[in-house]
Amino acid sequence: MATAALLLSGYFKALAMPGFELPVVRTPLSNRKFHSKAIEALITEIHKLDIKELTWLFENCFALAADVCTYYQVIDGQPDTFVKSFENDGMFLNNSTLQVWPYLALCPNDKDLQQMIKGVINRQVKCLLIDPYANAFHKDENKQNEKVKHNPTLAPGIYQRQWDITCACLPMKLAYGYWKVTGDTSHLDEKWAEAMLKVVATLKEQQFLPDASPEAGKKKHKNGKNDHPAIPANGMIFSNRTDKDGTVSYYYDIPANFIAIACLGHLQEMLIASKQKVNIIPIGDLKEQVQSSLMKYARTDKLIFGGIYAREIGSKGEIILGDNGSLPSLLSLEHLVNGITKDEYYINTKKFIHTPSNPYYFKGENGDGTGVNYYNTDYLIPASIALRGLASKDDNEIRYCIKILQACHSGTGFMQHGFGINDLHRVYGPASGVGCALFSELIMKVYFEKKAILIGF
Image (cartoon, rainbow, N blue to C red; front, top):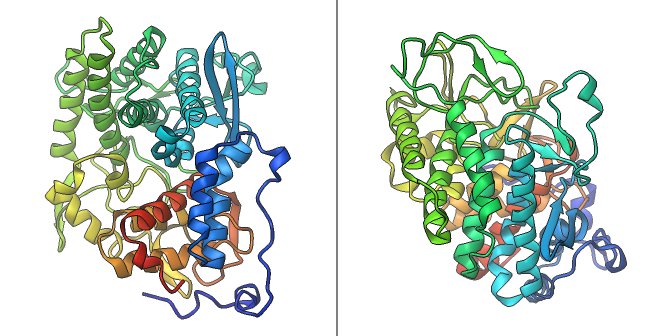
């Protein structure tokens, strides 16, 4: 592991100088969007560790969603919370789930925070009812997208319409996590059930079943935006997502399909608990079909690590063996999919991810991990490093991940989208709301479960 350069460069040397003061980068109290006594109490508690830079970084990242991205209100007696991306003004259904996820554990001690997160669930329901194919929405539900003249399918309120399995499914995870933490089922109402069934119908529409009909695999496949050529039926859910980082996806995104399975299982539980009059058998059938297809098509036995999962497979048998730093990733599944760590193929996949056999594994002066190549520069992704720490059982590896994350903020006090493997100041994109949330989760987990790891930072 590369550690020699983690604290190099003028800024990081300055941290060790007597009298050096870290800049105040958190939004001033008067300008914060949402205040939570539980969030502030945990920040105060962690500051008692007296780890100057790390606790400063935790405060900035942990409070970011509440301070800057959260717009909470009560509409018709129900909480409604719009959570914008830190990078732009759209609410992305996958990111908004991850942005507020670290706050769930604090809900039992803060009813206002509980209502805020319930409001996120309610807003996600409204968004899915507008269009389950859209991945991001405006705060103003009546705002018209400027691209509507080129794409008349853009309904008012849509910020971006790009089919993404995780945007359809992760709202299920948030509703499930909220229920399990609070015991509250009031959010599982008729509107919620209507939205969830709309999502299930969309997932089904994006699935080709082998031998479903004589025409299976011959027709064009609608993705909610464009038609694609006929693709072989294999029972998985189609995705046309293309990473902005330049990694062109094939038709079947393996991590996204695993997430869909997990979320459909959550949905079955919630529908039973809600006592909604809904037939859950088709949901179970869809879940089993996708699970069976993953076991059949997504596994490969070609590597020295034993059988591993592919990252993506294509329409003509193409396969990507590798895992980059973009979400969803194979690495992220341990955090997002319960029980996957018992899967032998996944255990082998984890061994493979952080080795040179993975084409998206990068190693440089500032650390190693999964990343992306952007404009011919290799970048490590802080969100991926945080996920590595969250998944690790090795105290040394966890400490190593935290050291990288402590050093990679380039003086901003927030997690970046990516940073150069040999230049901490070479970053791309603005701060990452999801990266900040995952870093916060890592620090919380270590603080409550393995506090000794933090000694010496």
